[in-house]
Amino acid sequence: MVGWKMHEMSLVEALMDTLLEMQRRQGWSKVSRVTLKVGKLRQVVPEVMVFCFEAASKGTPVEGASLEIEEVPLASRCTRCGEEWSDSESLGLCPFCGSADVELIQGMELLLESVEVELDGAEIGRN
Ligand SMILES: [Zn+2]
Image (cartoon, helix red, strand yellow):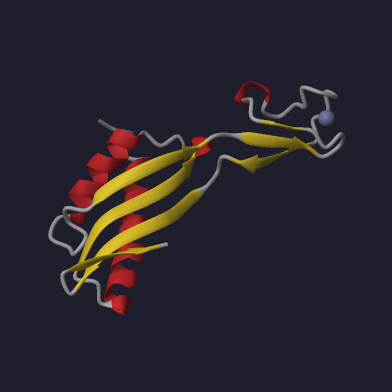
């Protein structure tokens, strides 16, 4: 099983650190929902990520929270002609002018989009 663990688990560990830090500082009694934005280039398998999250949150105030993952598609921009496109197949080469002078403008995200928590039993949203 070498290589199975994992990528997703290390992302989840970083996420848990962030959540528990926020929880401690802000006195949340419970986290009910977490939404992440993950760029396609991160190659995250959502099901694996959710599985890891459930395992890592056991016994913490985050336990039982649902994890939602929004995938952010790739987008590139040609720095020579200025065109933008979201086709991953032409990653690295501009489909309009053929230039290799291309920058990735979207697809590497790993953002904590929102966290819904319970505070003294009341459910509040936080963005
Ligand atoms: Zn171009």
